Length: 282
Image (cartoon, rainbow, N blue to C red; front, side, top):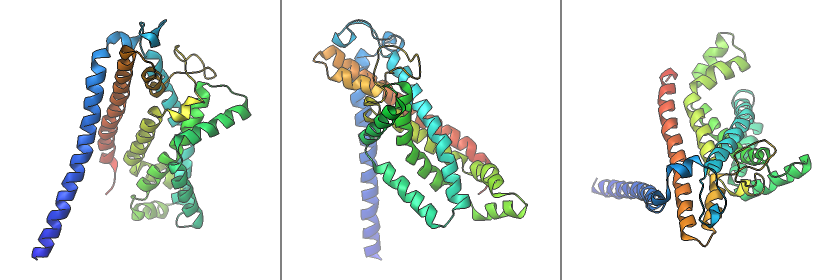
């Protein structure tokens, strides 16, 4: 009995330590970004595009990067959801417990582990094949490929939590597989599926490697699907690469804005998930 208490105490201490490490890391990241970035953060920085000599300490802001990041991640997430939802439903409704489902899950796991720079290189190849230059559309394609396995696996795990009895009841009432998938499974798993989508959106809006060659960069606001577009991760990269302390401080401010967007997404995800859970049959 004493041995079990000692083991429980050790593992409880390890869990508390792990939680402290995670929360401490988050606090350090937020603190460092705030300490370095808040002095340079201003309303003008959030509402203006870069002006002449911005990367040399001139006037202007990062509005182009904020709007560009939202367009890139939003469009890529929409494209990824359109492709991911049929894959996830097929795995659970039409290929459940089959070798095809296992192969699909393995493929998604492999795709999830591929570095984002590889997606950028592959997206660049697709752009050349389609005759595209660095553009908003090219960045959306690369980010959609990056987000695809995240959304599919997230939806897959969520759909697996739907009670089997609920699906069988739907079949017993005369519903087809497609009707069961769209009206029963997606409704019951909507909270988790939304979380997966927002998680992928957060990954997409913060990725720099996949859009470096595909989306390009510009000091202008997005004008066309076929023109280069700015993004916050690349704004941080370019500003930190300058030898001017004032511009480097703006990089931390840009990072703080990006972090705030991701945190806001997490809060929205929690609130929406709680609301959607009201309609879930347990």
